[in-house]
Image (cartoon, rainbow, N blue to C red):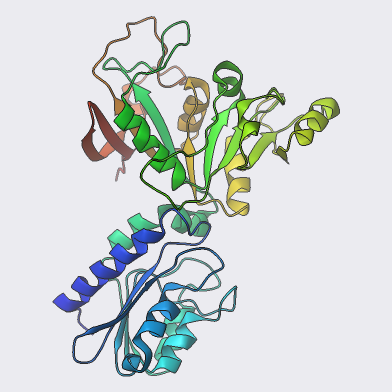
Length: 370
């Protein structure tokens, strides 16, 4: 079964629809659907707007109505085959009388993976998979990774000077980058399941870490996650001044501190340790995945960023570089283990590069070897 130019064109339209849900569908994936009649007319469009609400396919089918009979459905993710908050999308496509379904990528969710496709085939519907698969993967990196390996997609955000420094020697860092770059960070926060930091950053900087985008009006506030082995987070921290949840990962048995943080609304999650007072970072991320978190944005200091890098737990670096120099005494980006062999250095590949106001934004991903 061959793929046509129209298959790619309509799938690109479905992907554009899916992107409309980037800020609102968590923990579900962002999905778009286009219904095209046998005569080549677009008769229905839809996208998954919010978790718990209708999926993209039934929304598009509702618009298409009777015109869905004999049509082709273009979906960015394999149609689901199970009863969740909504009925199975595969069944609804079958009932509507579509004769062909083209989807971009298989759903890695174990309760769906391959089953939606098989249900369509059993109903003698032609199925084409893998149209713009890479683009569909990029759209839902966190969901895909959580379903495949049980860990969220981890992005580490850093604002640095030309010489790679994140703060002056006295800790001052406001502001290295300009307003446009900071506004861009709020968009990343708004599309993340969680913003993660360490207790050292909370104690030193007292950040709010909530999303305040100026050009996105409908979004779900991320959970603010603090890795705080000894429960050093002050109960009067700014984190607790806004409504979005605060989750503190710890390995402490200090009941007084536990009670004080619970009293101001914190959620506490006990995480295994790698030694006295040292959280197991991989276990912490796995527990976040168990709570349905797809994308985690790290905004932290050199110690936590270095720990994540040492443990190969960073999937993407978002680096905003400004046109200033802070000098050799300023704080660096990563507290790494001492390297004695260049062959052991962490290496990344440039994935995206663009100017944001007066600054440059670089997106790096771990270099794949072999």
